[in-house]
Image 1: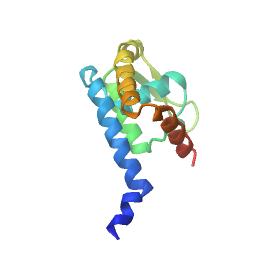
Image 2: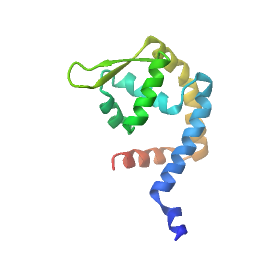
Image 3: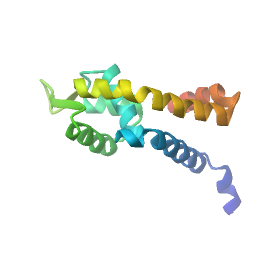
Length: 137
């Protein structure tokens, strides 16, 4: 029975996600942000003016994780948020400090990408393609 779970998609995808996240976080640690926060900064940069719900949906975050990370990024002065004109939505934009940090982080993120590319070899691009397909399931 226990052997069945070695083939479990949920178990293996969570284990892989944690392992990958730890590697990226190690590269970003000196900047004071996590890979999750970097992903969120990129989403805000690319999709400025979207609500928290739209950001969560576009990047696969649950709202609790997203809100906790947005609060942290705002406390760090990397983003600003304000109430949406209509409804009870929250809109986030990147500050100049956030933009500067993104530029500083780019080499560390590239190192993490290169490390993963090295570990996966020729399977790197195929793995990305599978992950993108899975994200749409």
